[in-house]
Amino acid sequence: MAFYRQVGEVPPKRHTQFRRPDGGLYSEELVGEEGFSSDSALLYHRGIPSAIVDARPWELPDQTLTPNAPLVPRHLKLHDLFPGEEHKAVDAVTGRRLVLGNGDVRISYAVSSSPSPYYRNATGDECVYVERGAATVETTFGALEVGRGDYVVIPRTTTHRWVPTGPEPLRTYAIEANSHIAPPKRYLSKYGQFLEHAPYCERDLRAPVQPLLGEGTDVEVYVKHRGTGPGGLAGTVHVLPEHPFDVVGWDGHLYPYAFNIADYEPITGRVHQPPPVHQVFEGNNFVICNFVPRKVDYHPLAVPVPYYHSNVDSDEIMFYVDGDYEARKGSGIGKGSISVHPGGHSHGPQPGAVERSLGVEYFDELAVMVDTFRPLDLGEAGLAVDDGKYAWTWSGRGPSA
Ligand SMILES: [Fe+2]
Image 1: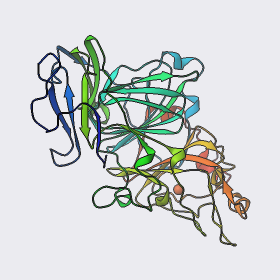
Image 2: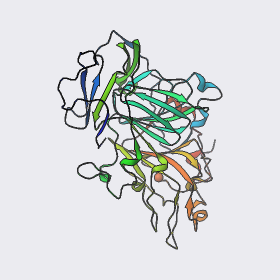
Image 3: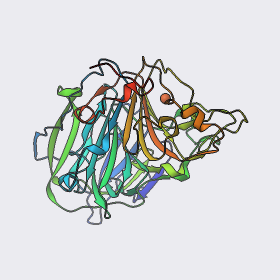
Image 4: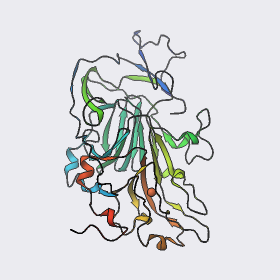
């Protein structure tokens, strides 16, 4: 992250002796990106962060990817995953089911009620969108209380776990990058401060405010890392002699944080604004945007729904979270749906949607969009809940049997 925070105790000078109450030394650890040349944090551990006593393979959930072929737009019904009481035995990490993915990003979904194991993703940053439910995200940096509408951004290798709280199951939409995830550079000054035109700023970001210390020995941490399995991934369980939550203080610019979609201030105009005004974050070869409830275009002859568009460099994945997405009416898409609009197919409003939108002043819609610059393939969960009909909704006629 772009700005400095300090939590707990840190010594006045970095890389100097910092002693525990018993006179021993804390272990200083630098967690840094891009080989000491980008953002970092300094953490002060009671124990030795390198210490492990055992390692064994972790068989990851099915990461198989199937090409979108023949190339068609698709409607994936996420709420058909995890039926009934299945969530009770599921956690938000090992229970993730792969919906879509490519070499840059993977999108998974889970409905969970069980605490996850301790976990670190060594393949890239994660941005987990909380569709419903609430959780405490416990991390080496401290805890985050998160709930409906939160994006939870967790830097690569941050040890953490998801503990669902509250009465309803936790519904999480996990966007796992093979890179870092950050606010778009155009929102930031050359020194990293959010600029006035940005739709959110530092005050909207919530980070841990105090250390979180755990007790325990022989603690398992599930590590997802680069490997030769499907998707270029592999998993390992490390057993640590002492609890990974042993950080008494940290400071720096790299830490987990949450941002709620309700704090995104939409940018509107007299005529239709293009999707970059809806952008929240960016990663390597993909962007994350959101469509939030907003006043819409106010030119007297405005057409509030989008024009047909062919994003020649992108696949576009829209996750419809709440409200009523005007442009998709008549397509069968509703809450919990994903639309896959691949590059190579021009998409836009379903028939009748343009006319219905004329004169409308407000859209009550909430959707999270991921645009990728390389094609997305389908994961096992995406294949399982493909409605098989969406491609024909603009023409009203599919292939004859
Ligand atoms: Fe689109």
